[in-house]
Image (cartoon, rainbow, N blue to C red; front, side):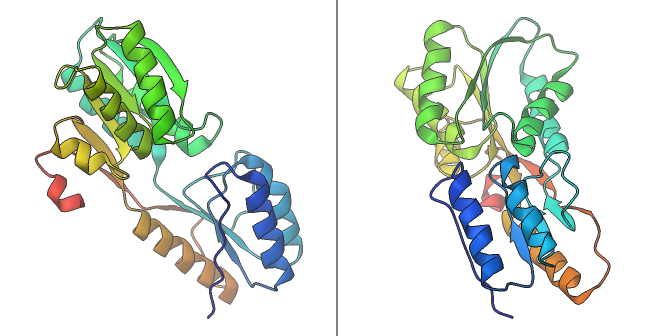
Length: 249
């Protein structure tokens, strides 16, 4: 088989991804495995399906869209619960918590926050702010700085993506609050290992993106061959701490 790769200019490049989908259909691909950057790419995927091209989603789902043959993903709600369970062990009633969201409206990223909050129940933490980061380090720094400035007694920050977690670690360091603010991230990528080694990040939820991509492409190949494919394929997640981080590098 021949694999054609395409990518937009950023994680929020909707027009670029739509152009890639349309180009692939024009080139006559037999199937598309894709991480949708926004639900609005569904219309382009509908055209692909109408042309006889099966679609497997990886990582992100598209709410209320039934066109996919399968979704290969981390169960982000359950993975978020891993982060919440950890925070529940280190927070107490009244502690202030700030949240660095990813891209609000993207189900996988929203689930990471909702799962965390669900698992945190039983501890009445005071959520003092949420901010969108578009999963970038720069916005992670900015949102974390705003939280730390507004709440000097902030106890913890939860970041729903890896780059903002690394940004939050930098913001905590800049504020000279190292080891005073608990930081929990998600992805364990993009500078998080360095932040954890330096003591700036306490925990993260690791996904297994290579496994996710492998499962997604395997499902697409089965679909192309007309074989049975599970509609939801979970690639799992795990908690990373300084004690076990060497296994995840």
